Image (tube, rainbow, N blue to C red):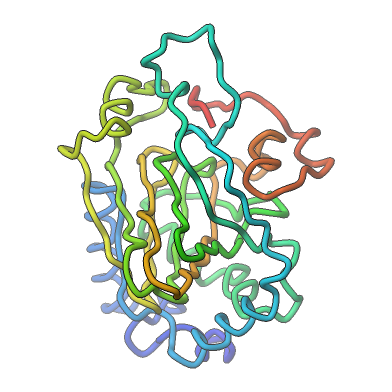
Length: 283
């Protein structure tokens, strides 16, 4: 067992370094069932308090490097309208967004979060929980394990993720608001289900579930197939979250348009690997 991993994750409660342990087998079984039913599983107090403080400090020391954006986007993370589509198509519904990211390329080599993301123990554990193998760490140099920052009045509207699987690690909780809302399995490969997506965006709550994460909690999430958002931040305390990501295709990265809108810049790799998605879904 890696000594540093044991200083970050509560390995006594969650021995992810030993996938044959009865405790982990039980946890994997629970997570797999929750992910199959609701696209989401939560592991409480996964990160140790001391490591949580380290991650918080890492981020706050680099807040001046966070790319903040206020532009309107649709659920597919694009800001440009397409008048050729029907007016009711959710690609033509644009929502207020105010949040930012400390991009992955800003992380120091010794970063606590970067270290955790790059451990095989976490990768193999998440793969077992999803029941999907192999999965890969995301090749996108800006987005692979970025910190999400939501300041007071910040809001992250309904959207789908570009990567198939996302972890959410709550680092700092706001005073009020910042609630995670999601609609499990609302789309699937080859089926956008625009009608139901438009209903949710327009205010229909029938499919909406809520999750109120606490600092230290780990969420495993099928974000590419599940419409989700974060409600407006209230009070003066920002919301800090790290969102390590895993993918099925080790080659793929964000599209140039997506990278520019969300992470504030485009790198050569985003142009070089800008290919149509094999699942037939919009980014």
